[in-house]
Image 1: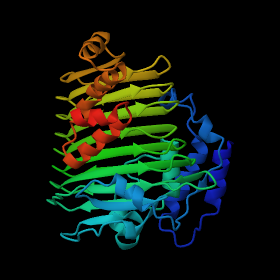
Image 2 (image 1 turned 180 degrees about the horizontal axis):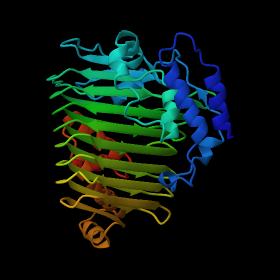
Image 3 (image 1 turned 30 degrees about the vertical axis):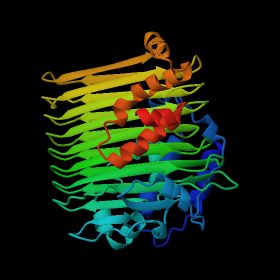
Length: 436
């Protein structure tokens, strides 16, 4: 047993049992974590990502405290959004916006929803993200304390995005939090949800997040994830999406922070006519390890999926992309396309990419591909011949590579923020902001 596993066993043993409405679920989930243990390199899904550095640390559960990272929250805010702020995994109402109460919608803390709307939450919580197959999802389920619960009744339209902030404060010991979000979008409802994860650069902490999205018939959800964890942090996040008939889901992921970070998205077409787009941009430098894994499960016919992930890696950064598109036997008229492109800016940068198509139906349109390359020397020469320095020329071409994903974000204030985040990772950031 690793120090990490031992610390979680001891922490779970100390949890109060009486009065806990989730007791049976927690105990089942922790038993599954104890059985599976931390993922190892022998697991095909973790072949290129080792959790050995994390396994050697005894993480303690992050506790609600008095720290108020107001300045950090303000710097991360998207203007015009409804904000829910979680500090070390716990909801902070004094830092959050007042949620509108109309038409039976609920936008607030999962802990509060469990107390006020237990049946509503219980119908969907832990029914989609399968803790039986994934040990870290099991650990999140065993220790879940708080997060966001968003319930939109049929025909609800939210004009303003919902912005979920998950801010770590760090401390003298390595801490661990398990944010759990549940988004239930009723028939024909529409909303945009932003998840931002951030923390101090000098603290060792682990964020183990799970978000479940349940789409009713004709529902539309735009989802954004900005991962800006501190330089010594660990981050593992699962986004599980279940599509109802004719529903539409768009995911935009930006991964910048963390010493080791893994972002996983799983989408299931449980009914026909669904549409799913997964976009992702990951930018690593130094010795960062950024892992991206996706699964689009075409279980039902006449569904469409599009996927574009791009990586920019410098220094000795290691990027991973594993994308799987599964087309089941009854999923006729499937239309699926998947592309992964990577730009290596140094000799020490590494990418492991593995796009996969598994097709068991015969009336489909499917394609996938991957590319790995360096900056084009002819393009660099052209820019330098126009008077640009080598550094500026490289930065302009790098941003041009990433801009396709930046420009795909429809929320203008958020697009501007993402553009600033991307350009800040490159030399001559001020110049790039002027031309971007």
